[in-house]
Image (tube, rainbow, N blue to C red; front, side, top):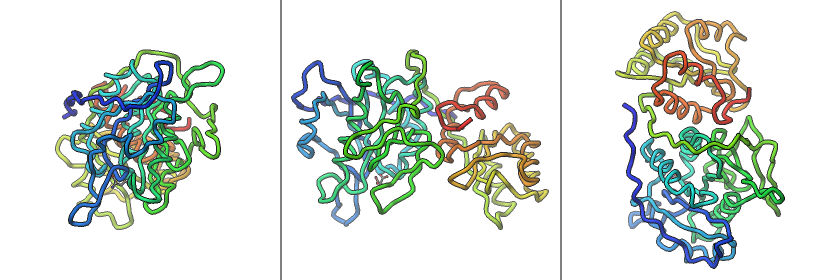
Amino acid sequence: MPTPTPATDLPLLPLPTPGTAADPAVLIIYTGGTVGMAVSRTGELVPMQFGRLDRKMPELARLGLRLSLLSWPEPIDSSNVTPQDWLRLAALIGQHYADFDGFVILHGTDTMAYSAAALSYVLEHLGKPVIFTGAQVPVGRSRSDAQRNLITALEIAAARHPRAHTVRVPEVGVFFNDVLIRGTRAKKVESQQFAAFKSENYPPLARAGISLEFSDKSIRLLPAAPLKVHTRLEEKVAVLRLFPGLSQAVVEAILGVEGLRGAVLETYGSGNAPTASWFLRCLQAARARGIHLLNVSQCEEGRVTQGTYETSAQLTDLGVLGGDDITSEAAVTKLMYVLGLGLSEERTRSLLTQDLRGEITQ
Ligand code: ASP
């Protein structure tokens, strides 16, 4: 069942920054994550309401921006994020799109790459920046990375080309530590250090050192079109990660889920999988039930090229689709998005192999 459209009646809180009407307007949407966490009575980090974010970060007032804040009524650890949250974020951006120059989403790091990819898909023809950021250490703690991440994310969300004054990053991005990564290319690679995100197969869209350097040739510029906010994501998808010793019972259990519509097959190397007849029969049965299978490599760098080895050639014959250099995070959310469109088999298969939001290098 595709996800129903969520409510978007959240109160908008203008932050009292001394901006003038000529300054760029940025909407911060706070969903939770370590950035806003505090230690509970039992000693764990739990998400908290920000209240007046400007009191926690007085430096926001010096940015020359007009800022507003929307907060999740119950901030979450991002391990609890759902497709419902993604649709709500997309709907909020759609609702406030005309009033802001850019958007910054404060989000936990654990699933930020999934959320950024999902938003990339459901916000079609995006023409303004939607920048995800967060922190590894909560705001207010000594050595927190929240200030620098949020401040640079806000600068990116407000950035314009110096001469043409057009939007600099009309994309969903993840800004963390010192890099801006395309939303469909991000991967969380680090849980202890500040450099938490990486893109293995596509260069960063910007780097923040002493100055903020944009890599204009890496940023997608599409012909202007009205934003289309999609409202359906198909949740009946699965990930089947291969490992030596994976049993038939497990494969059957995953691919046999009632109503399953699609699965990401996390294969070895350049897209290779066992040639055991029971395994191929399981895939064939899944395809016969109309389940779309997208082949993604477990390697972080490189790409799936079905047919290079005997161990991947049969996947093509069975109708498994090669995912090129897509990340697993982008593949799962792409399946949810494309299957949520309710298109014909042929059109669905065609979209699944196309580059829709810069997620694959063609
Ligand atoms: N568990 C946290 C979350 O994803 C981790 C973080 O924000 O860094 O919400």
